[in-house]
Length: 585
Image (cartoon, rainbow, N blue to C red; front, side, top):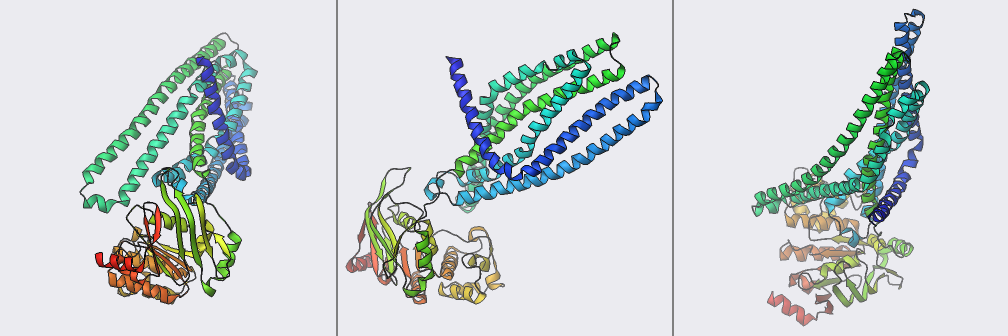
């Protein structure tokens, strides 16, 4: 019963590895010409090395027999083979480097594109540090294996077969002795395959945990310092590192045991070959040159076979990494709807603006199965400012994510339509009709101008300055030594929360989209500046549809409609209720 279970389990692992190899082949086949050249060079180098070994036999025989007529030509052949080997090795190393970089970059580009197009909710189940680890370390492992494993399988196999053939030609018994370790190695590799794969998965998971911890630490360094948590986080790092060390040392211990056992078998075979060669030399059946050849070839045969066996852990490591990349790359893509109609609407956005309608929408996060919105109804017409208010965690940001097409509704209708009643479903495709400003910092490292031109690469300096003026950001930008060419640190470092928000608003305005979504985007501004920014936004484009979420009722009097989101319900707030909110605040 146990054997039957182990057989099925082994087959399951082999099937997984086959799928991962097929995935790797998609990238490998694009470079099959380069890889083919690399393999051919490896084979030529192997045959030249073997020829040098055979040449050394005849050289020693010529010396011992004092046959000077052959010595010169043999030495010349050996030297030419050695020089050829050096040249081929140099060419192979160059090709290897080029292919590794090409394959690595292509896989990273492909996986990067897939990750940023993954359904937002699905991607949120992974830590960004884990995704980064898969994108870097795992893709490097796969790229390296393209030349570090697959071509080696071919070249080492040919080296093994050709060496075995030469030994068989000179002495069949020697070949049999040299192959004694083969069945043992094959059986052990098959038995230990499951354990190798498990260790590889654990090590990569532990590595992701370390990277995730470090990334999160640096992202929240200000808070860590502010709350005096440096010692606590240092201790946490040591715990995470200890876990990684324990897993790595466990694999190291396992590797030492298996490699030591294989080394013992290899040493036994080597001494057996040596003993047989000494016996054959003593009995006069072989010459000193043949004895030297046997010693060289038995070592080469054992080495090439060990290399083939050692490709098993390498293959498992590569396929494990491939599996981790596949897991992410096969997550569901974002839903794109009505793409052609969205393109048509985009071409006519400046004519009359766009309206948004949310009708009887139900939504719950798939990983929580808790209803967040129930029969929600919201309408926002062009030229209007519509506010979403309510307690924290009740669904305001969720509604914004639905409007952005980041989340897919369970039931109901979420549409954008123009004045001629052409309507399209809200999805990833409708984002080109929107500009979005979240509460958190969204500035990237670079200059202010570079950040602005992310949404409009062709924007002139005057257009950038105008957008900064509308968002009330130019007052502090013009005081900087380099103006709009001043640098911004990572996540807006060097600027206050309020300055970052105004810069983010300016970038959104530069895009000049018919729909503007502000998610607590003015929370760090004083009331007067907040009202001035909103007034400027609407005066800039009378047809713009603006939806804001806010905890501050002070701007609600500027809004055409106010909706309250609380306990899964969305209700429209009357003007009297708005006035009461302002007074109570």
